[in-house]
Amino acid sequence: MSRGRISTLMRGDGLSARAARSSTWTILGFGGSQVLRLASNLILTRMLFPEAFGVMALVSIFMMGLAMFSDLGVGPAIMQSKRGDDPEFLNTAWTIQVIRGFTLWLVATGLSFPMAAFYGEPQLVLLIPVAGAALAISGFNPTRLESAGRHLLLGRVTAIDMATQVVGILSAVILAWIFQSVWALVISGIISISTQVLLNWRLLPGITNRFRWESPAAHELIHFGKWIFLSTVAGFFYSQGDRVVLGKYLSLEMLGVYNIGFFMASFPLLLGSALVWKILIPIYRERPPLKSVENFRKLQKMRFLLSAGLMAVLILVACSGVILIELLYDPRYASAGAVVVLISCIQVLPVIGLTYDQAALASGDSKRFFVLTAYKAVAMIAGLVIGVEVAGLFGALAGQGIATLLIYPATVWLARRQGAWDPLHDSLFALVGVGGAALAIWLNFPAVSALILG
Image (cartoon, rainbow, N blue to C red):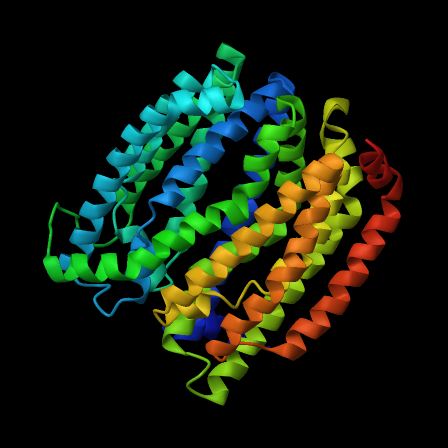
């Protein structure tokens, strides 16, 4: 592609130009975010003990679970609705969001005692209510955030996200130096979300949200959101089930080590998810693959480019997992190297099917999206529980791998309903991914075998 064509593409107002710019901003923002997260991780792991990260993992899982268990799909609804730019619709969505945030805070406070009893961690009685305040604060985020995603205008959003993360990291480091405890991570989270809400209100263009309840808008949001709600409940168990299950079986120290390994290995899949979420829903909405062969071909080209980049990074992380942990972390986290390798290998199939399920949301088919997500959750939790019961941490990782094999046919089912399935793409990248996974395990076999043996 010539320099002139690239310049035209990046400056134009068409869908391709907006998608290209938004993809660039998303990649830069995500890459910068991960660099900042890694830097803070390296600093904080030297200031705090692994147990602190284990406790914070439990708090984060609980907070995320509450948020996902109550998700009414306001963001996807705004992105796909014909009324997505209507102030009445947006203000009703914002009102629902604020009510939800305060409700979650109250629920978090009420459930802090049962959580502390279940995991045998008295600290959770106070940590959870304080961390839950972030849920109430985030409810005040303006709908300008969703409007920017709807129209693929993500430059300013990315800058705000980066600034928010810098504030969160600086506050975490300062508070860790003062408190030397998990409270540094909890309080810095509140500071971070408060900064984000303030910057979104001050710097993003769009309407000034006010409390409003329009019945037709509320009906549309709730009707679309009922399946999103169920999907996010299932999605929580699919994406966070490993820490929910392992938090019960592993020591806090080992859970903290697993969390470090997961953080390193999840980079490619999280990057892909960010791109798909921010870019593909608007593209699927405007160019549904069922409508024409031309739409399918354009989506196919984008899918190949995305999968090639993600698979290359995934294999690189898998092959270098042990070395990365040895270079970046102290010996207390050495076991995380094998975790990085195995989780990276497990994510080959999820990366291949990453671009399919958003086609259903873009077309408004939130019901089938829920069916797929529920199946994924059941398969993943079953694999985790059976695996950890049989063979501990390695068994849980193996169970996750088997679950991804069982999930793939269901992903194809949904993709075919939307006219999005591309068998050529899947076959090619399956060969590449399996070869890369085999190479990674061979290169890191001593560390992997050590994890298997105990």
